[in-house]
Length: 66
Image (cartoon, rainbow, N blue to C red):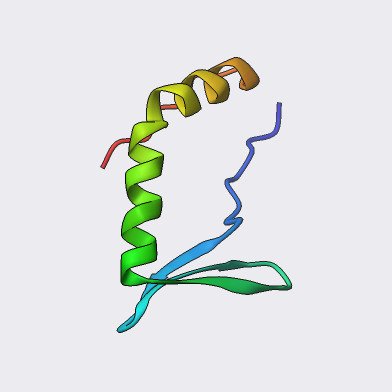
C-alpha cells in the first residue's frame, strides 16, 4: 500500500492586525484580533463535539496535540 503524504489545505498567519486564514485560490479570511479571539472561544466550546464528528468520519482516530 503506498504511503500517503499530508497536504497543506490552509495556512494560518498571525499578523500585526489579527489573523489570516488562507489556502487555495480563494481570498484569505481576515479576522481582527478580537474577532479571532471570539472564534477561538467558540471553537474551544465546541471542541468535544468537533472531536466526536471527526472521529466518526475518520477510519483512524484523530489526535493532534501541541
